[in-house]
Image (cartoon, rainbow, N blue to C red; front, side, top):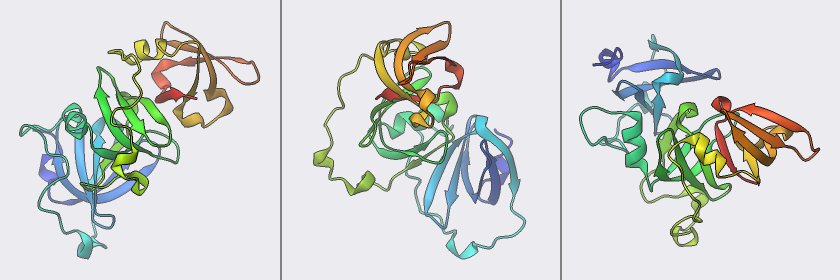
Amino acid sequence: MTVFKDLIGKIIDIEISGKNFYSGILVDCGLDILVLYMGRSQRFYYIPTVHIQRVKEAKTDPYSDVYELPEEKPIEPDSSAISFRGILTNAKGRFVEVYVTGNKSIHGYLTSIMNNHFVFYSPIYKTVFISMDHVKWLIPYPEHSAPYSINNQTLPASPASIPLARSFEDQCKKLENQLVVIDGGDSGEKIGLLQKVSNNQLTLITAERDIVYRNLEHVKTIHFA
């Protein structure tokens, strides 16, 4: 039983890393994940607890008229105990929205779940490797819908074949000598030639030929440029 069990069915205020604040009904919880239903947007947020800064029961309910729960959650656990990895596994092949950093989310679908990262196919960014440690939340799309209203037939039946590794560090090593984008390229120092991955450090050569060393523990996503 988690410390949040008594709050299930109640409207709570939650703060997530990065000064993100949300209010919604707590519909489920596990040792490492909460499920929050946002009545106004009618979406379920699957939030790893590692990024939760604060939780409290809401004192007032300004949106009581929009908090009518659907009969079923979009992603149901395989057992009574919900977990982050279990949710990722059950979301495989389904269109979802994933938020890791900055002011934008990534839309697409999970294709493979590894030890500490997963492989994500985005119509915009193509194949992206996402560290599980940095996922702030995941939102499933309604069933039978797709990002950007793209017809399913226009998406590849299986994304481009890229050798996969069990760990995020080993996966990055497979991208050595390739042009890559880190964390969505939110700065010029996160786009360049991945020269080397060693001892939990990435060595990146930027367009200006600067050599940047980056701690792998703080790399959230990486994909081909």
